Length: 389
Image 1 (cartoon, rainbow, N blue to C red):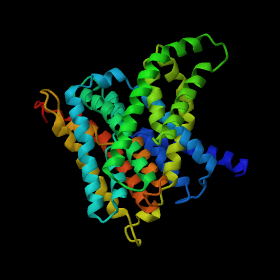
Image 2 (image 1 turned 45 degrees about the vertical axis):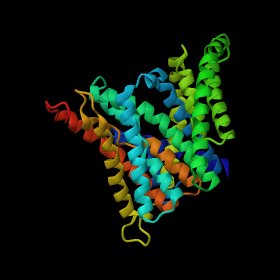
Image 3 (image 1 turned 90 degrees about the vertical axis):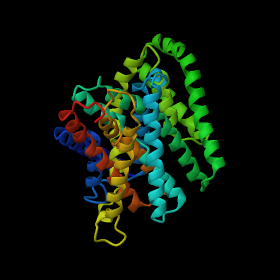
Image 4 (image 1 turned 180 degrees about the horizontal axis):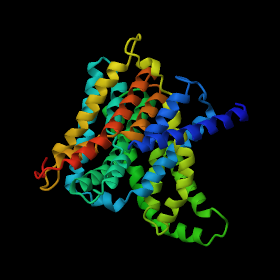
């Protein structure tokens, strides 16, 4: 690839993603949707201004590692332990029901089991970032339902990463069996537990040592080295690299320099994470969603969107605590956001999901992400005296 082409491509990716992100935020949506739309527009499916390359894809992969590292930093392992029975039950229902329904629908439509497993896994995702942003904007983060949703999302993140590790491993072996699922689940759990326990014990000493160093950028460089190193270890034992990056974030979140690391990782994320979302959008072929085209995927995109929304709303039925509203909990679990895109991208990269179905799945992610913010706002504007409503 010519360096000129790469530079022009990056200029377009960064410029258009920020313009589109600004535009959708001004209408009350998340910038992620703008970055996705930017990728669709400048990609081969529409204007063809930017084409995928190995270098661009590598930057996108690094971007998703930074994204999950940032998510880990913003999580609190003590919140996970304190999530409690209510949040845990909501998370379990919000994972089991969407997976079962997604798998069942794809199997009923005649798709092979492995593809059905990937779609079911994608349905389990929840983008807590989007829900948290809406609740913060509404001043409702201390609401009882908000605490349940955010607590459940911590558990959901862990379960989702384990599921992603399992389905990615299954795609590499080419089949689904109880033995392979058990083995991969065990490896994912053991890796997370060992990495977090060992990391928490060693991290304070490492951070104190780094604090004595004088070179510019030492803290952020060593933090990213830690994240990328754990990602490499995860890949070495057959797990998704993002599990390692997420574990690194969880570990460093327990240190006294957490806020400093968070502050310094933001500029890195601002540069690399949009590259990931734009490249995701570039893979979408709008022509494949034409309802009048041969092998059109528009119908299945709508069906899967309805299924994706309904299966997450069921999580609200798991609320049993007095004073916690069920509808806000269910709706808060609906948006798939960046997590769903990671699942869909993993399926495409593994060769399990074809390009036409991938385009439909990205539309599902976008629609579920679009519908949740205004729905939550409407629920809180029309709050009823009945706390179970």
